[in-house]
Image (cartoon, rainbow, N blue to C red; front, side, top):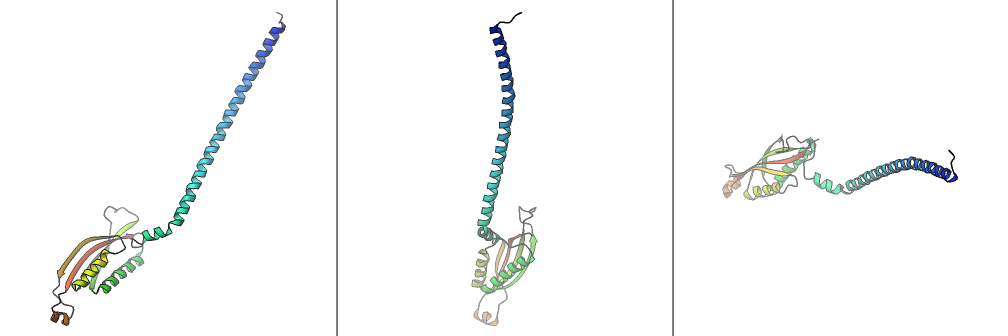
Length: 189
C-alpha cells in the first residue's frame, strides 16, 4: 500500500501531535510538582515568619510589662521563708503603729479550691490584740487595707477584763480584745 503525500502528512502530523501531547503531559506533571513544592515552601516560610513575629511580640510584651508583673507580685507574699518573715514583721509593725499589744500564731494551709496548686498556698495568721477601742479599730482598718491577697476568716471583738495600766483603770478606760483570723496567699518556691 502506497501512501500518498496527504496520508504521509497526516501520519506525520499525528506522530508530532502524539509526541507533543506526551511531552505536554510529562512537562505538565513536572510543572505541577514544582508548583506544589514551591507552595509548600511558601507555606513553611509563612508559618515560620508568623511564629517569629509572635515570639517577637511576646518578647516585647514581656519586656514592657515589668512594672505590671512587679505590681502583681506585690499582691502576694513572696516565695520562701524570708518573705514570710518579712511579712510577719510588717504585721507586727502595723500592730505597734496602731498602739495595740499583740500575740500571734501562723501556719500553712492549702488555698480553698487550689489544693493541688503548685504555685500558691496560704499562710493563716491568728492575731490576738488588745488595747483601746480606737487602737483596735485602727489596727483592723490597717489589716483590711493590706496590699496582699487577704481573706478574713474570723473577727471577734470583746471587752477584756484586764487593763493596760493602773492609770487607765483609774480613768475608767476599757481595754478591748480583738481575735482575728485571716489568710494571705503565699507563692511557692
